Image (cartoon, rainbow, N blue to C red; front, side):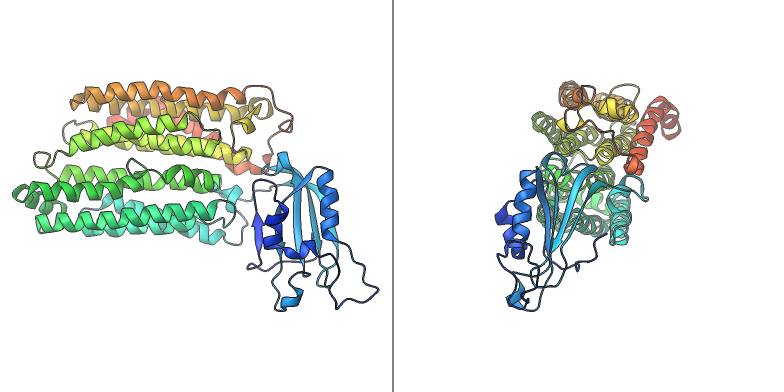
Length: 504
């Protein structure tokens, strides 16, 4: 271990790619000091960090993280203690990597230290989140944010009052903004900012819609709102409903408030992305179903057509955008936009098809399990690109099979849970008279197979030169979650008939 430490507020920069000298200079200028600080004696052994860095680069080691201690003396800022972490460029994001840690100073605040060895992530606990947060000094913060977000999603789904709906919207949003930026490094802050700005706009739109509906109906309870809308101006009610639906679409990751999803999925750790793309979606879609079915008469506002259009655009746009992705997390981000389109089909026939509600609930459960399995595979491998999963079957056959089950499950391949979920949703939609929407959904389902196969195919190919080592079992909890969720998806698909019979 290094015989030193850096305060939490020390300037730090970490990247998924090699750092340039300009990037290092802005955070840790003391690395480039060309002489010792004037306070040092003639006997001080000056070892120029910049020269060591240059030689290590020649050997193939690239800096990906730098830090410098804070100092109260401005004249020491360019000489004070600093640290550099270096890996081979092909191993920067690997779960296992040859790493060199260099610690030095030019003012006597630290001795010269160099540690070299194999870096291996060691997991402590926490399911799919274990490899991200277990043992972290802010682990408690992570857990609290997830629990608050879950509470908000539960209240959102159970709301029967417009005021409570908006309050639950905020509770399901604010903790997740903080969760998106929890890592505080890489692209996480940018992703969190985009998520927050999109959420702020959606929140303003939602409160405006709630205000319009209250002004139209003269009440906030769903039953009273339904009576008020039936006797009030239909145009104002339609505008208010659309505004509220925009806010709920933001929480669900559906069009037209979907643009934050791929950025958050790609810019955050897989565990965080799994939570944000799954948890609020459940609460938002259940809330939307309850609102439409209870508070808004279809003969006053033609909301089935509105929802059907949103479903069609969401599933199509998500599919089209996913085709060209090379980042697996970004691919899953666009996939979740497409998936919400299929779920909206059940909402479009709410109240017109007896199977609509159980179909939606079953699909949500199936999607949540399968989506977590896919993100858990990414967390277990530590690879964020399609090429990074090349040869996965040779390295870890069970994990590769879990990946296949998850991805083909998202397509809707039997006997997975999503297949049965899609089947009952499509059946309910046909019963509700929206045959054209089912036809479009079938086309999108077949088309989605293409980009999922782009991920599966390399996993069964020959390992590349940078992926010869076996997948580390240090990420055991993420790996176990992937295997368990994949198995549960199959079990739910095989036994889903029993589950549906108890609900219907």
